[in-house]
Length: 258
Picture 1 (cartoon, rainbow, N blue to C red):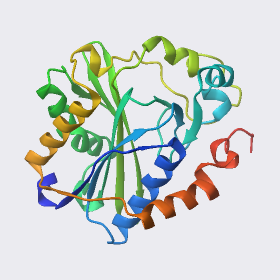
Picture 2 (tube, rainbow, N blue to C red):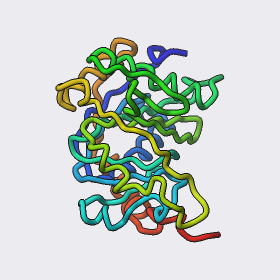
Picture 3 (cartoon, rainbow, N blue to C red):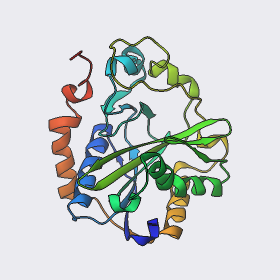
Picture 4 (cartoon, rainbow, N blue to C red):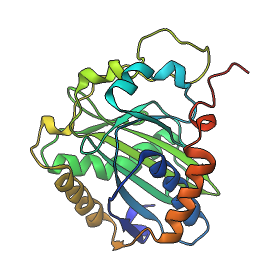
């Protein structure tokens, strides 16, 4: 199956606080699963700096709390797996795909990552970024990692989201994330030590223009219809922030030994 075999809705970015962005990902996945929204491509941006944990990571193992507080980073946890991502206004380009699992039927998880990010790799190449795919879930340049992807699946529907470093100081990564430091708790997925090479290394295009270029690349492969996140969807996401994504018992849910 191809991306173009489905009709897609496009949601363009508006800055939201990190916990709300995490909740909105879950709400949109549920809407697509329930048939309330067609397969959707969403680009999103952040209104504040954050460290975003994968669902199976231990907060104490991953985050240098002192550095995060000093630099003004909040901590959030997404519903998907993978490692910790550093995000901030203007520093990343992030997108999510919400689609029926039929789109990746017959593929392994590794194959599905490559398939669902192939258009983005092509889009980056189109603006002069020497991008390629590296299993399991990275978009890379010859010099290091550009982006990391993660997935969650519910009710025969897949969420695939990818965060690209646009203008990140690589020196900040080991300061905020406890990469290479001893584990505090002997459980959970640890973030891997990888060299980060932001998009700005190869282009002066703004994040907005990079996003528009990526949208054009996707649209050349699969028709896109403009959509919107309505008040009801945002209200459901805000309730999820109150009951889960903004709560300390979600953000720090794996720190204690069982």
